[in-house]
Figure 1: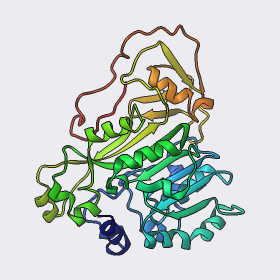
Figure 2: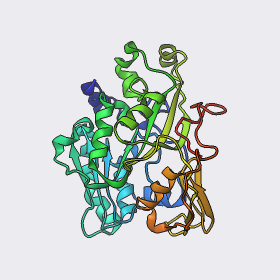
Figure 3: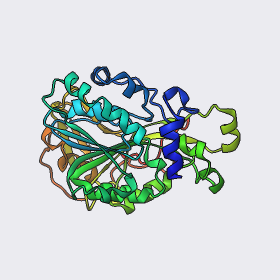
Figure 4: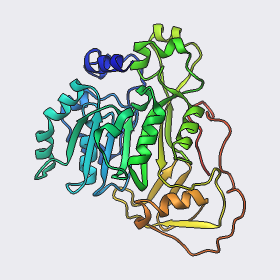
Length: 347
């Protein structure tokens, strides 16, 4: 299947118009500052984009970022602008044809950004075997991936390597496709369904289990949407299986608790993250308004206090005695309402 994926993304797909589903697409309009950054990216790079979400989180100035399955480099070149000239972005991909596009426009982007030298580099490699690339332990601040982990045969290996490479308090922030049930073996071997990011998708509950086994004890859902499959042949093969595109953030914080526990803690956002002066969202369940003291569970407190976000928050002094579960946390139903939400909510 690895060879089939390389063939699909290196030969079959020549642009986004060749896709047969909406899985490998990002329909939502980006905010103005990201739209401006995308406007600086070369047209050929944009045309070879097959992501399913915006893996462009907040507070990135000076960060070292690793992009798993970077493809032609669209996200890398946007992130290169968000980290600034002193930051660094490393893209990893196993498809030579995609990397050729990314590298061909490296000088163009350096000039476009007004940098003295490029702050992006591209490495050919397998995201299941990151250890082969010689990347040091705890050497990156953030790892992103956009609709690629579903294409890996050994997804646990990807998650475990991400944990190894992240600095304490760092995070894996990625968009991917999930299914509402386990995919039958006969579909997992279909090269078109696999290449379209469908038959390699994890059942959402298996993803949560693998994330926790890999060290990411409290996955947080950022955004989600249903995936439309309109190709009649693919619909006939898939039957009743439903797919969701979801963006998660997984913090490297050893010792997070299995549930959201209440210790009487609160945080107060200062409004200092660029482009987020009014409010900042941690995930779908946490939106911090500037200057407003917000009660949080113990895990959420650590995600703010022990990450790159700490300098942007105040932490009001309170008596910290355990009060049981944080009110309103969690849901047993992974699909809420019309089915556009995935499990992993908190608060």
